[in-house]
Length: 115
Image 1 (cartoon, rainbow, N blue to C red):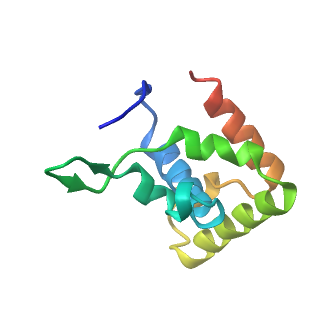
Image 2 (image 1 turned 90 degrees about the vertical axis):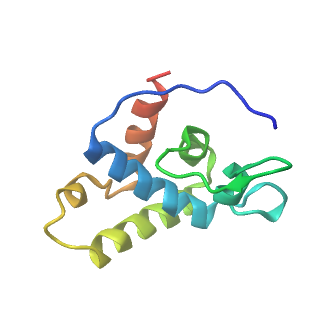
């Protein structure tokens, strides 16, 4: 098993939901290591046991948004807007979803300053 030092940082449930939506959109746009989906890459596995990760945000993946080309950034934002459109209009998280590339850049940069 290999690993890295990370941080655990408390955030609001609403921010968690927004960042989870960003993470899911990025997972559709960013190619994972060795052709794996990023969520598969982050799953736990050793010689005896394997399990999917859940209820955690991958800051590396979210921060990788800042390294994308502008067209890829726009693709992520389009996926986020589609997620809002497909979900319940009454969900308060929808109001917090970044609507432009620049909005999402600011949100991710704020997150990167937490560590």
